[in-house]
Image (tube, rainbow, N blue to C red; front, side, top):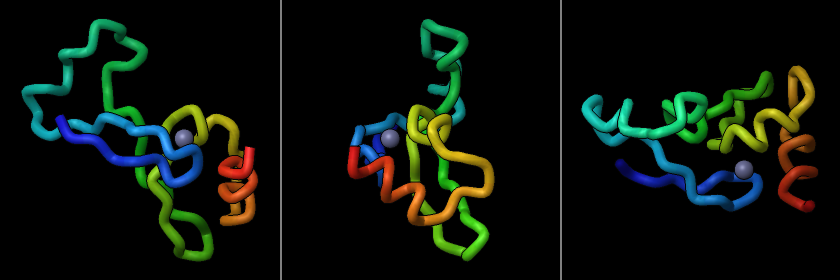
Length: 71
Ligand SMILES: [Zn+2]
């Protein structure tokens, strides 16, 4: 496993470092990487945890990501 930092809330998020680690989570709902890289329509990319992704509206803009990080 390796960790990345959420670009919005700053949480450290575990991401699979190898296929063998993928199913080692106890909770099936979390059986996967804790975040993902989101590419916005303007081409900018953010690595976000799922908590932040759930809080974004559809078709988020960088301003929406910034709004989350301000909270
Ligand atoms: Zn986050």
